Length: 219
Image (cartoon, rainbow, N blue to C red; front, side, top):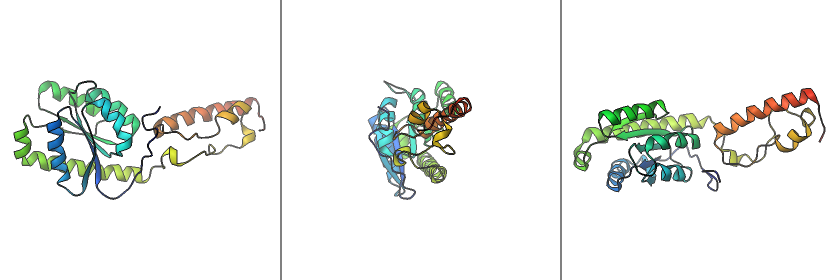
């Protein structure tokens, strides 16, 4: 079953920015949640203790921004990042990591792998409580990236699950081979990510054109 299967992801363009918090520390998740939800323009829609939970929860959470820890058990942030982006290519990921040479290198890898931004995580809960600069930076980044997500997705096509079955563009039934017409001419109701479908569609169109040059069959 696909990650998003069984959950219809709505895409409201107003209301609070939807955020998922991913950190193996329940205390850190709680502190981050209190900082963010103190702003009425932000809503925490899901929390996760590791990358595997984050991937599973993302489709249901409708999160626009993910605050992702790096070092976690089961599945770390760097491993989870490509799968998070595969599920929703538009989602904005903020890597949160304590300042160290090793974590700085890992965070750089995460940015190269598709993370949108980075924020240094305080080394103690006391610093989070008293750190005005950290609070301000976290709020500013979440709100800016949430707005960017909405700008990008406002022009994007609707989710595949909402489209039903549609003919591939520019093709008539008699332009393709029988096997292709039966099995490849329609978009199935599926929850695969849009990027995966578009790649598959391009491959199908190439196959259709080759089949049309060789032989055409009616339905």
